[in-house]
Amino acid sequence: MAASSYQIALESLSPEHQEVVKLVGRHASERIAPLAADVDATGEFPAELYKQCHELGLIGLLVPEEDGGVAAPLLAVCLIYEELARASAALAVVVSNSVESVVPLARFANAAVRTEFLERVLVHGDIPCFALTEPSAGSDATAITTRATRTDAGWVLNGRKVFITNGARGGLFTVIAVTDPEARKSRRLSAFVVDRNAEGFSIGASESTMGLRGSPLTELIFDDVRLPETSLLGEVGQGLPIMMDQLNERGLVRRPSALEFVSMRRRGLSRTRASGDSSVTRSPTFRPSSSCWPTWRSGQRLPAGSPLPRGERTTPAGQTRTC
Ligand SMILES: Cc1cc2nc3c(=O)[nH]c(=O)nc-3n(C[C@H](O)[C@H](O)[C@H](O)COP(=O)(O)OP(=O)(O)OC[C@H]3O[C@@H](n4cnc5c(N)ncnc54)[C@H](O)[C@@H]3O)c2cc1C
Image (cartoon, rainbow, N blue to C red):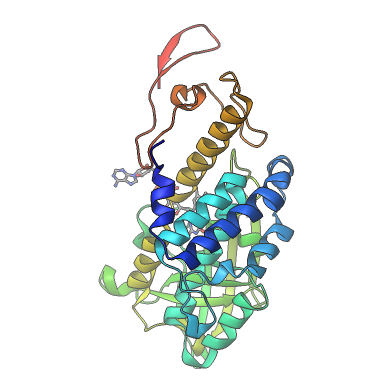
């Protein structure tokens, strides 16, 4: 039988990294998968599962070794995400968000606080978050209005963020804010680190989502939050490149749906294969809202990166739709 794209990717890694991916795969099957349906049903943040992933060292996957991380190659990180997503798409998003949100701290934090920030995340399990989106600024990120104003002692932050992954459980938040509204777009923004316990900072409401339940999307409110000078990441006016660096790492918009698809594909296929019954169309944690997945349902293998299969479904009213 021809090797799958997954197998080819796995075998292109060093033996050491292959072992790590397999270890995460075993952990996902034995410890995560049995709880995935509960996470989905309750929508509760999977704190114990996150702790286990933290203890496995996964949060430092993209952090250099000299900073206490693992510095894994990107391909290994993708396969690890896929192993997590195979068991629970929500946990994969929770964990991958932390893996990526610690990166700006490692790359841009002030030397006086960098070690403390990294220790909090990598050793003590504080959850890092990345806060850019606002009610009136999504795709057009430079339209944000959260404002950081300089004072004698540092900065004062005012504004509101929404849809922040893990926000309800976050410990350290990278927040993008306007520091010079008059400057050209490329110099208008700066990035700051905000501690969960900072005075004037509060966690707002969490969204109720259709999928990825257990991965909370939360509102953050900054009301005259006083920040020390050392909370600035990089230089004043460097918010846009820091933001782009972060978005390149994570693909904020694409990742959740991609992970869900991978997770669904692998769980669907393995169940179909295991049962030998092509009528098996459900896994315990995924409820298809329509039967738009003819290829998946028939148990046919999809090469990685192939477009979503198109097919026909019958609506409750009996009409035939192509989707
Ligand atoms: C699961 C999830 C997790 C998230 N986690 C985070 C997080 O941790 N931190 C964070 O800061 N944000 C987060 N977000 C928010 C995310 O970054 C935004 O949803 C994203 O930037 C898109 O913004 P929007 O939802 O306001 O959509 P909009 O900007 O309103 O876009 C809606 C649609 O219109 C299209 N569109 C927009 N502008 C144009 C245009 N000019 N021309 C043509 N088409 C256009 C877009 O492509 C999109 O298809 C998360 C979102 C989700 C769904």
